[in-house]
Each structure stands twice: as structure tokens, then as C-alpha cells.
Image (cartoon, rainbow, N blue to C red):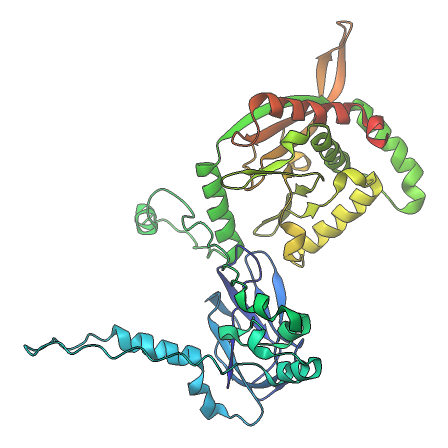
Length: 434
């Protein structure tokens, strides 16, 4: 039976994507693991692999098509001996035809007595839909396909299903519930006047319409949701960077031969990671009806790219050296700008850093990225007059930071303790190496 190839959900937030490029054409032979297409999600361009084998019978969605919904049929794969005429037998197409038929209004009933509806047909549970490759592997393993749950379209059993299945797990596999589909992202991207109202407001004025891509739509939806649903509060501190700048200079001079150059941002990442260990109750996220408290410090760092931003996550950051954090951050930032990050590299974390100091911004308030409980907004280090411990006037490099906090997870005193720990780490950089 022909197999539908569906638009995959390549990230938990993906609702639709752009079919950027096909790597196969109709009539090509396809094997499991072959690259079928490149798909642009809201965050990256990713390769889509085949999970089955056969002949590419029909491509349903052309290259460059935008707004393809997750689980839409994008192509149909034929088994050996099948032809294009068999495509009409695909369950999804039959389902679509049934849906269209259901949309046609039925004729009004006459005065005659109602006829009892026929009994629903008994579902045939003896037939198992599986790919030829899956059947061959199952035969070699002595596996009963009736006890295997298929992950392919319409429950079809594919290669990966039989490779991981065990004969003894027949009952367990049959009873395993299907995973829930990824929850849809927030529907509301913005508030205020409607599109038509805004366009009418500027009637007669020259302007250019800029179409929203998937990333910009996701940013608009998530941050609108965050600002409306997360009870933010803000804590601000000034941090003296003089000791850090001197220490950084010494380290960079010693590391020059290894080609390592530490940035102030590398120290900030390390300081935040250690602070989450020093104030462990703040190392948590909001999970709807509970909080999740973490043992490790997974710190996300905002990276600006053309048209949006990524927040790649440095995992176990408290355990890594400054040079290791620097190298990992450079790699993640480079691949983020090329949109080559895998979903697991920018999802998760419990804390985030947004640094606009390199753009000359003195201070700002950042919006929390759910489910994180806090984000540190970092401004530029600026020479300012200060009053020393002995009351004398001096000049120091001062960096202003703002900690945005989710009050559902972190109360005021706890947030203050976290920010104090970050400040202490940055003003005493040698202790971060202890």
C-alpha cells in the first residue's frame, strides 16, 4: 500500500514550515536514511530523512512552498510493484474524500419513518501495515509484527520500530499510548489595531510591507505570551569590573599562544552558572502546576541573527573552564547565525543571559523566555565616578545589570540573593577558578 510522507514536527514549537528543497524527484528509489528534503522551521533549516524504502511516487508539495502544516502530506512513497494508480488508495486521501463528502449537505428527510442506521462495520484487526524492509527485519528477529506499534504514517510499522522492538515486549508495546502531538504555539502574536486598521491609518504614505517569516512569527507569539502571562519583576545592580578586566588581561596574555581570547561575556556565563549552584532554589523553571528544580547549571545565551535571535544552551556550565565555555559559545554562535543548530542545542536551560553591552546599551529590561524563571540583561561597562570604601572619589568600570524574574518561581529575597551571588563572582573573578 502506498505510504504517505507527512510534514514532520522538527521542534516542539513547530506548527508549520517551508519545504525549502527536495533532494529526490518522482520515480527515484528511496532507502531508509536517505535525505528527502530540506525543511525550514521557525528556527533552522534541517534535513528530513526517509524512515521507509520504496519509489517516490508523487511529490505533493513543491519546493519553496511556505506555511506547510505539520502532518500535511508532502509526498507519497510506492512499494515494489505499485504504480501511480495506487496512490488513490492512500488512507489519507480516502479520508480527505470522506471529509469532503461529509461537508455536502444531506437532502432533507421526507415524512416517512426514520430508518435505523446500519451497524458500524467491525474493524479488521488482523491486517498489519508494515514496510517491506520492516517485514524482512522482523522475520530475521522472529518478531511478531502484531505486537509492534508503528511510528510511520497512520501507524505503519517502519524500520526503526522493529529494530528497537523486543519479542518479549509484545503486550507492553501494544498497550503503549501514542505520544501526544506537540502543543500549538500561542495563537496571538500581537495586540492592538487590526492589520486593515493600521494600513488604513497610513493610507497615502509610502511604505513597504515586510512579510513575517517563521522565526519572527514565533518570537512575536512567545514573547507576547510571556509578557502577558509571566508575572515579571526586576532587580538591578551595578557591578565593578575593574578586577575582572585586569584578571582577564592577564589570562588572555597567557592563553595567547593557544589562540584563546576570553570575553567579558565568558566570565558572565561562568558567574551565572556558579551563582545557580550557590543559590540552588533559583535554579528552577515553571512547569504549569509545579516547578522543576535542577542540579546542573544549563545557561542559555541570546545570540542575535538576521531577522531574529537564538538562545543556544551551554549545559553543565558550572563544570566547564572559562576557555571551554569560550570555545563552545563561539561555535554555538557561529552555527546559530548560519541557522545550523539542532533543536536540542537551543531548547531547555533554566536561566538566560542577554548582553547588549557590545551595542553600547547602558541598561535594559529583558523579557523572560518561558519556561525559564529568570534572565539577566547585561549593559555596557562604562567608566564612572564612584565613592571608595574609605570615602575617596575614584573612577571605575561599572556594568549595569537587570535581573528579570518570574515571581511564580523566585520571590524577591531569593532573586536578590541570586543577583548578589552573580555580582560577587564577577567582582572577585579569582574565586570562580577555585
